[in-house]
Length: 140
Image (cartoon, rainbow, N blue to C red; front, side, top):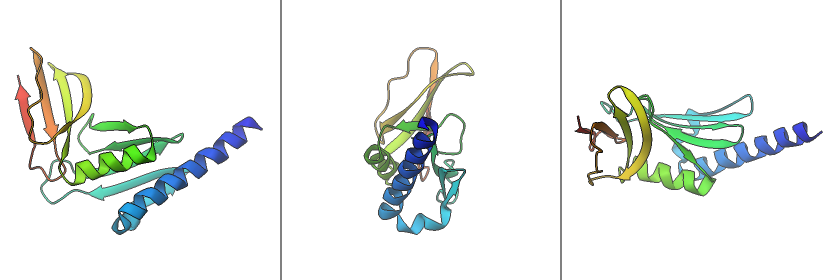
């Protein structure tokens, strides 16, 4: 019984997340789908941008936002935070920062566009922005 209730609550939460996303970005309705009770919204980035797509997904009710390049994924704790992150990414106020040491992934964070994150010694940071305006590599 608990498992069925949890599954039903997860589906309701996913539909609520979809509703919030489409209320903010109604033009994205054609990019949204529900598959096995999970949400995926895959919006093409501006032409030529390395971001490729902005993708919003749920997994067991958890919300994630990502771009196409590997390791550009970020967890959102709530629908409000998800919308705030998506707004920041599509307006290019925020960028993904993927930090690696040699070829090994260290972390993925978000940063305000235009700033210069401090690269740790021996680390390289790759910044990805929605339209490509702020894409760059810092360090190694």
